[in-house]
Image (cartoon, rainbow, N blue to C red; front, top):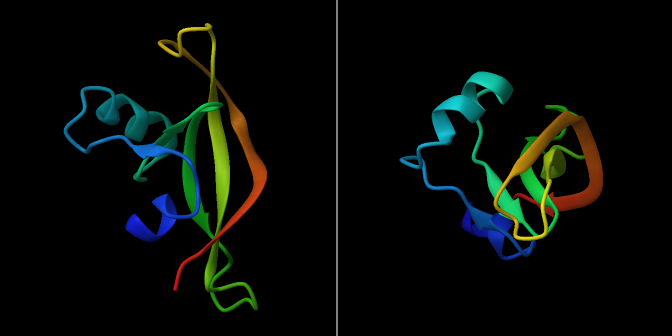
Length: 86
């Protein structure tokens, strides 16, 4: 997680946050990140592929208001941001 946060402007949602249970039900077991655009997760590149040492940032929800207090989920979308995992 530290490696990811040094490469993207976001904060990790703590595992004990009340929303993590519902997010895990919806999207699976991930570390969830919040940034200026909304909710993101890191998806590892295909195991064994040439990009095995990187992860792709995937957007799962966008802020639905100007105060960044409510999220609107959507289909997972690759953001184009790649994080080095090593």
